[in-house]
Image 1 (tube, helix red, strand yellow):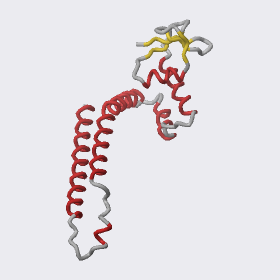
Image 2 (tube, helix red, strand yellow; image 1 turned 45 degrees about the vertical axis):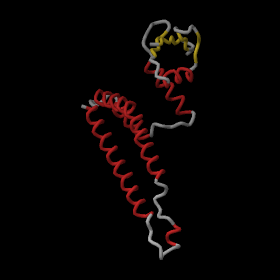
Image 3 (cartoon, one colour; image 1 turned 60 degrees about the vertical axis):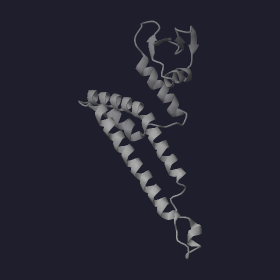
Image 4 (cartoon, helix red, strand yellow; image 1 turned 90 degrees about the vertical axis):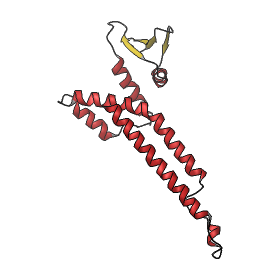
Length: 169
């Protein structure tokens, strides 16, 4: 765990490397998967949560708006309500599942797209229309390949759904 001290002047000091860092550097550390803890330099109070919210605010102000207004409104509405602890646990578990399953889902989608692109386009061969007297032999093979690709996508989606259900239990 990397310990960061936050001073009254809002400067951040990385205790592990003995140097000051910026919020964007802190953001990069988090993106790399490094565990951080931000402590008030004077009192030792844990400031990790408000500092991470500050990082999100900075990113959102740069124009990368990932959090929809409706979602932010719903989160604010949940504060000081009976569902606050439930929503907190739900968000934590959902993000953990998303982080764990994202590579699998990306890989499955990439594989499916590769299979589809290997089978060219979904449109029938235009040159076959120009030769109505010749039998169209590529179309049945293409339809078969398309059906196989669609079936593979469906199977992968079912597998991902089953994994997600087992993880959420």
